[in-house]
Image (cartoon, rainbow, N blue to C red; front, side, top):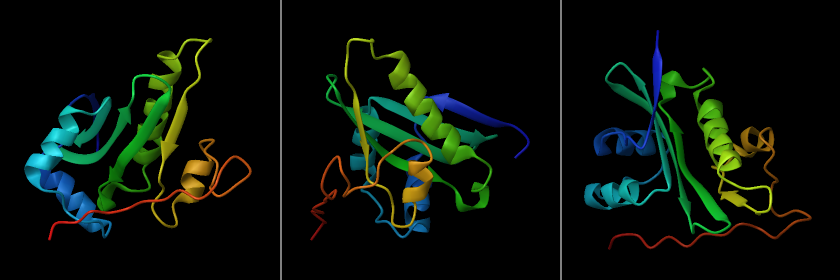
Length: 143
């Protein structure tokens, strides 16, 4: 933990990605499907402690005004060190720097249960709220 390195457009290995997902109680993703997701991400961030991946976050974008933040994950052993906040700040900075003053950007995410406060501290609004209804999801799982 002496020197964490943040990398852009460098995915964590799929095994580490799925290990983090499972640590949070999420489902593992088929390795080839995960790789395609990495390849088609608008912004892909990873955090490394030496050769060990310890965090990741990525975004999807329509290249117009809509951005979706996904897969914000920090290895449980490295939580509480500000890595998640740093990943989020880097994402927000990236879109601030790449959005002209004339443009509108809507940045969306779906917080894991109990993590809403983390994102609210960064300026995100909890839904449902005055600006919109509840976020929703439909999972299509392997048979």
